Length: 99
Image 1: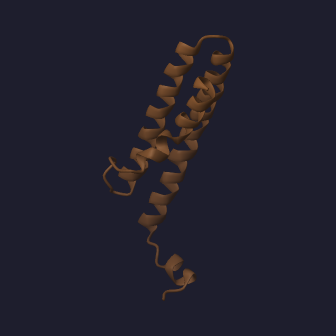
Image 2 (image 1 turned 135 degrees about the vertical axis):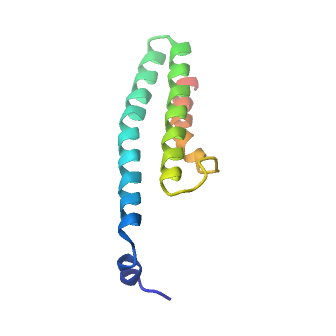
């Protein structure tokens, strides 16, 4: 079995760049997703549930795009079961908005 330190030193510059870009994409996408979650909850509390649902749909789309970009950075198909991770914040918010 290869030790962890050995595996870390075996990473190429290109692999490190891919991981850094992936983390940047996820960090940049997480801020608007969080803002949209807060906005949809506030809109729901103000009685504008139709607009809150639209914002939740926008959250799901943004999350799927972010996960798809990360998969593309790693030269994988953007269409995979990992897209469920992209819609997880939207599903969680929808639980509060629709519940």
